[in-house]
Length: 447
Image 1 (spheres, rainbow, N blue to C red):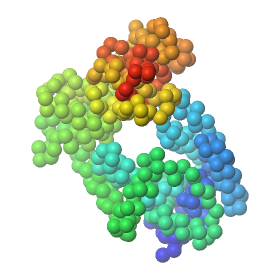
Image 2: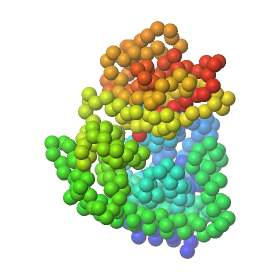
Image 3: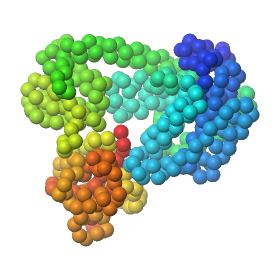
Image 4: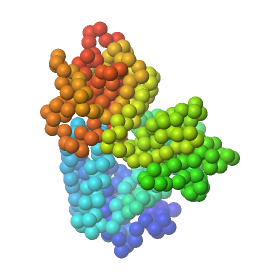
């Protein structure tokens, strides 16, 4: 079946949108989104085009913008363009490039829908994107939920190309003389997704040329399995979880003994409260050792182990959110962010000037375990490049940090000494020197 007919059938069978809807197409200028635009216009859907210029690739970004505007003009459809200061946003928030760009574009898409009357947002993800996401999440240990790929629809955001492979989309573009632009960053193997796309998946296809369609069916089955599990978990939740005065209590003796307690706790804590897998693993280890009163944190929730039960409540404003970071830990969660840790030889450090959301400190000066917690009145440190002490409160005032951001400010400590006012400045006592041999690199990402 030709791609156009497959597209029309997929949209109709999955009820993604109709000819009565106004569909906002998110078009980057790449082959996937340009083919999505062509298919929608050819099918007679009422569409508009939204293009984001993130300003990250200089002239390339501007050429993408011009290409999309010209395509929209040829098709006679409305075109909206927005330029973002993505680099500035990354520096302001400490987010990764991917996180900052995603947040900026989806917020703008929603604004456009409200202002211009669009009912649906269409994104050009396809089958290969879903497979790549499967492998990314497999390596990150996200559990079954992360292995279900990219959904066809979430709310009014739809993905009408999820039936097609990258190869099929490219062949359609060539056959129908659809102009598109190639993002040079797609060839860079410094990104995990590209390593999977350019390195891993081609090797698997050498073994099984039908890998894409096979994985599509596997991901669909995993999605069905997750939906089955989610339904079962809600039934277990109704029996094992009680709520009183803002505190949810998971009663361990009410969990079904035929299933793994740790698995049930993962599903209960991850789906409803957003606890991460390694945090839940530590919580289960505390239960096994009989530790009561241990506290474990998600972005907005704290879970406490307490004699045969786990109690979950909203994090209060005066909660220090203190967590231990043992030597060798790969990450730690604090508030609305995660810190990633990597120890390396000084000889492997490529750059000594890093943005504020990263830190490089002398690993041999650290006292383990480290502690990650909210800052508090009375905290002080010696800001990098200075010789005298400065109160964290005064430092945040000088940095013009808002009250909301202050409430989310964390510090990383070695013993009683602050190593890093997270996302802002390291302590001069832990800086790299000519005598440094081992470096602890820390990267902060907003969740």
